[in-house]
Length: 590
Image (tube, rainbow, N blue to C red):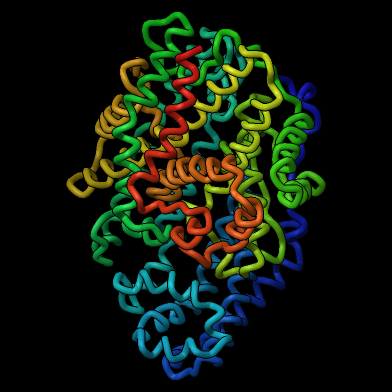
């Protein structure tokens, strides 16, 4: 759909953070952060154990304020870079800010290390002071890493080398991906535009778009394999020094989720592959008049789908009305993102592909990035990211240190926002054919969230295990990718030549190892949570908003207890997967 037909797409204004890269306010904040960090180091280095609870609480309050300042600088740097990774001036600025913040925060490393050296009894005594007790959840989450902490010198070395190590390789990946252009009908498309064509109504357009994607990915696959190998080896070295029992252990710890819970989730999804993705894609192939779907047909519109493009204003109205029908308070917060320049929506050269919500810092507000192209899936992406944004606003009251939510629960509000939007669209649609299309679209989104992301997690597990033995060739990475994709997608999809390169465009593998299972966790959790809501549970909306306000202060067991849900119960995942299976049952019955 043309830009004119989509309407005026909003672009964010980052002035709420800083007016520009050369703004005096930014220079001032950098100087302030450095001066305060040095003063903090001088005041407390080597003295944490001797502080009483009230004094330690005061130290933590100052530490939090410094982190807020650094978070503001880092947010501005990261967002301006995400908006245009192709501009060398912005790239230089972003790298300079990363280096400055690393240097400044090096003066703070001692603090968390000394906190973790406190024995439990000594800390418990200090925690009797209300000022320190306030930070109890943050201290709890910090100390789960205590068994894996290295010496002060090694921790400082790893911290200082980050910008020239992992961060540099990540930047190389991001800038390479942002610079790629995919030839199509005389045009040079970005990755977001080329991938969007895989949802085109014309099968020949989808085929040629896949050919272009394959050609460009293949031409760059050695570089992407080198980046992946280097980062996996870098992680393996650090994991070995820290004595993590498994490559995914640090992710489980930061997510505040037990490994057995993740294993139960992944196992339940794998066992459900035949009942979910295998069954659905065979059904879709039949609808499209094919024996098997080509891999480029996986997200093709269904035959009766008019594939109507949706202007931005209609997308905004659809999402906000769905939020408002559930909770006017939720919609009011969501409205602020549209009333202010907090969303960046157009597809632009150099812009980060995909979508995200960045929380920034509690004293400002989140920003959303989407690449809006008028598809129904883009509306659902908007609902998803707005859910994140609303969650981040509500959790901001917990402060810089405790507003972050573990990834497993961070996906709850986003997926719940999608579900609200889907249910609203379904309720408003009375045509049987259109209802069937909506259900099919939702099933595809759920399969992309649950089945696809679980397969991604399995891919990472296999890659990191294999990398411990030797460097992986591009061919070996492709073979692992094809193996997990065949298992998850099933016999209804033909994974023909070229698809072995498609692991390379998934940014989570580079940015956040083992992040991906959080999507499946959130989707299954929301399916169960929404069932409670539909059962007219009294006070559900208030309990839900309270859950979002909790930020990172509570674990998943505590957050779900008011809804009588327990993610550690193996039957919990079956309930969530059963929702998807039930929708496929409806489609088969029609």
